[in-house]
Image (cartoon, rainbow, N blue to C red; front, side):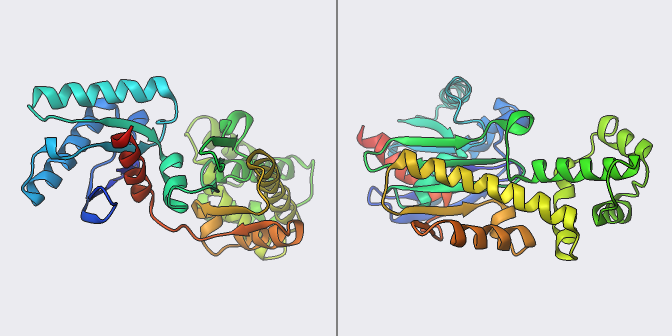
Length: 301
C-alpha cells in the first residue's frame, strides 16, 4: 500500500509479485489525520481485497504500508500496533504487517528492489539510495527549518524573501512581486507579513511564481533556481559517494522535477553538464509495487 494525504493506493500480488487486484482507499497520512482513521482505511482495503478474491485475511501472507512519517521507527510502531489491535477486535487475522516510509517503497519500486537512488523534490526534498549489499542510504530530508534544499517550500521562501527586500527598497524589482500581487493580492510589506505570519500562507505555493518569473527572464528568480538546482546536485554528489557505484542511477520523484517547468529543465541540463556518471532513469514500477516487494521480503524473513 502507498499511503498519501488524499488516498491510499493498494495492490494485491501473488508470491511471484504478479498483480492480482488493485484498488484505492481513503487517506493514510497518520501525521495529519491520526492513527485511528488510518487504521480504518487500511482494514477497509484489506477487507476489499479479501472480498474481491473470496479469500480470508489469513490468506494474505504480509502487508506493507508506505506512508509519510513511516521512516521514524517509533511512530511506525505506534501505527502498526493500532492496526493489529483494531484488526484483532474485528476478528481480522493479519499474519505480518509493517509500516515503512513512502520514500522507501518508492525506491524499491523504481528499481524493482535492486540498487539505485531516488531524488524527491516536492514541498520538501530528500534523496534515498540502495547499495549493492541492500543497505539504505539517505541524503537531506532535514525539513523546512534546516533543510529541504531544492524544494517547493525552500524556493517559495527565498522568493518571498526577494519580494520582501524589494518592498523595503533593499533590493531591485523582481517579477516575483508582480506575480504575487496578481495571484494572491499581496502588494505591500504589511500584507505580506499578515499573510505569512497570521493567515498561514502556503509558502510552497510561491514556487510556481518563481518558475514563471525565471521563464520571463527575471534575473532574481533565475539565480534562486540555479542555486537550488545546484543544491540538488550536491545531494547527487553525496549519494554517489555513499553508494560507491561506477554509474549512479537516479529516479526523479515530485512535481518540481517530474513536470515540465523552468526548474526541471534547468536541473536536467545541470546534471548533464556536471556529471558523466549519473543516469536519470524512469521508475520501473510504482511505489505500491515497491511495497509488495518489501512485503515478499517480510514474508520470507
